[in-house]
Amino acid sequence: MKIRQALRGDLQGVVALTTEAYAPYTALFRAPPIPVTEDYSPRIERGEIWLLESGGELAGLIVLERHPDHAMIFSVAVSPAFQGRKLGIALLNFADGQTRSWGLPEVRLYTNSRMERNIALYSAYGYRETGRRANPYRPGWTLVDMAKPVDKAA
Image (cartoon, rainbow, N blue to C red; front, side):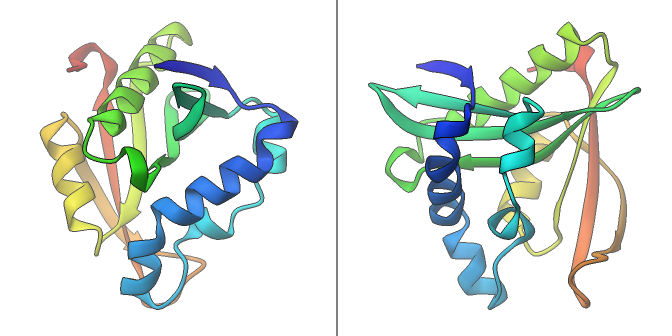
């Protein structure tokens, strides 16, 4: 397993993996989740996307934003072919380490309230719910905000 920053040439792979990984939620919501509709070119340019490769294949990715007082996970996606191997946890561990290297005290994320499995995973990993709010881009959808101090990394 290797984690590296995404480059311009990785854009198609980022879009394809994200679409595949979020496909069950696209079906559940009858609309694609926000990460599926994101324009990833600017995020690649800003250095916010890291790719997890296994045997030369793109297995997963994490989109991690650096803010003045925290890091924000925008998306964690694992290819369906690689799910069930704890790669999502590997990506969360990477986010913890990157946040520490930036000298920031916590990692934050938000997810759809209907993504109960993800909320349970994040809670088990040490994230705590900090609030719920309406999704400004999708009327009727609710976002769950979560945070985790990096000094409590798993």
